[in-house]
Image 1 (cartoon, one colour):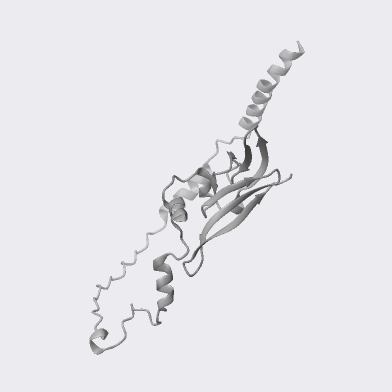
Image 2 (tube, one colour):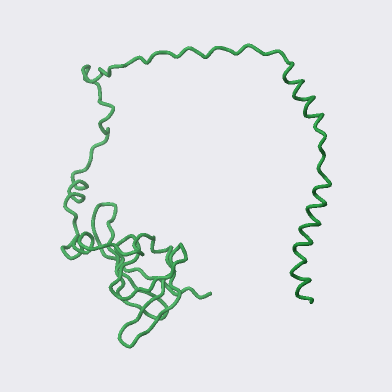
Length: 188
């Protein structure tokens, strides 16, 4: 019996609420009619004409004929050493180049390394797995040899408290180098 009363309770509450709100409605719209009549009886104004559009005037840049400096050329001299470094990919070994170019990207390589969090590990008889949480709160399982981060970060070791990676980065002079990085376990 008591269960039936609890089932009826929402329906009774909805009925009471609709009766209360229905009593608050007024059908008198005379103030709206007066305002509409007032607006319609006002005299109309004159609309200002659109401003005149000036035609486009083409300009031919002829300062180059007068031996002036070309504004689109850089005004500073590039150093020869900077150009040589960037063109030759100094420090990029064949193994590094193959690792950068000749493989499919993995899902965790779309995120910056510092946005990824290690939340745990799984140990199997023959291999260890790290549990990584990405910024979208998706959980990923990675092992040694997988890649993460935007700098070709290859996982080289998985420990209980961290994942060690080797990244391939390019410095401001265009020189390629390997650097060590790690993601530590986040304890909550």
